[in-house]
Length: 216
Ligand code: CTP
Image 1: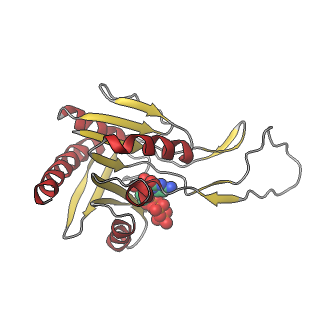
Image 2: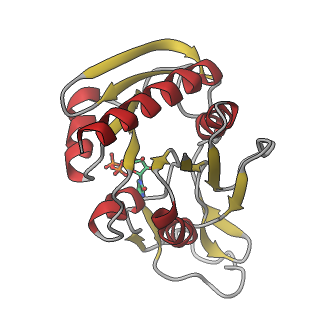
């Protein structure tokens, strides 16, 4: 099976030395990549900048901005069976990138931002992806309701939701606790290391993909 995984944060440039980003460590996506490789699947890992070692035996494509990640994903999607969007993609990016370092002048400064392309949201509707589509949802409240809304809006087969308001799990942590939201059911995976969770998630994703293909 060919599996695309996006991971890590994106960096949105402000000027040649500055960017907007977020606290994503990339650990969940890298752990998933290792879990699928261990089960002898072919993984393309499209990753924003992280401090992690590149997992063995994956095809690794480093990117920086949301636009770079979008372009790499759009190019790869026609060739994969399963696509898992784990990356914490910036929702907004500066309208203009200053060609030179912005010098300190006024007491306040205003950055104007524009929406980035929703990579997951465009996988089916724009790029016509027909494989098994998995998104992540980082929420601070109404976990199931928000995840279910994303499942429908982004035409996913599965959303893996985590509550980022709880300390010690999710963003920039070694552990996670997730709620798997699918059309007909929800499955809770209790707190565990991202490494262990990744193996459970990989197994569940492969099972669901197989049963979806069986009913097509
Ligand atoms: N995502 C994406 N491209 C974006 C933004 C998000 O592919 N420009 C993907 C993420 O990789 C994740 C899913 O969409 O799989 C949900 O991301 P999340 O940040 O939870 O939700 P948003 O759609 O950005 O909505 P909001 O921030 O309003 O909750």
